[in-house]
Length: 162
Image: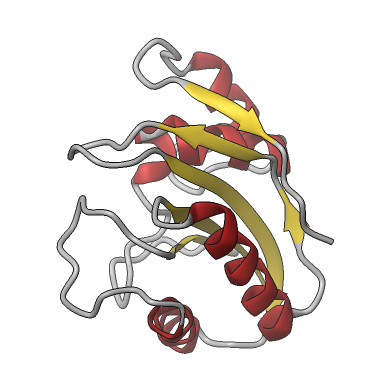
């Protein structure tokens, strides 16, 4: 079984779509580990604020099948097939890590947003603080401690999910 970490984001009916995304992930993978839920401004475009978090799970799916499964979940929850990067979205599910795999095919792993965006790094550091980034070999806790927190403001918000 592979240990996976997935980022979840939404800025369209975000309170509803984050819950729907978590339910779909639980149906797919069973037991989930959850970070806190964070609110952040849109990055790269003008749009409503986002809710973001990171989920950990185990899977028997190959990386390719996992990518297809997550896209299917996004589309079944209202994600626009023609959505451009940096646009509002109902549900965004990105594979951050698949064990310690480093690859660019079928997706980039580890995902570069981990070290670039607070809304990915903080929840990942919270969920798996001692896990090491497979390229930098630094723990996510150490990466978060070194991160320039003035670049992106995050606020924890309550998550009402069981």
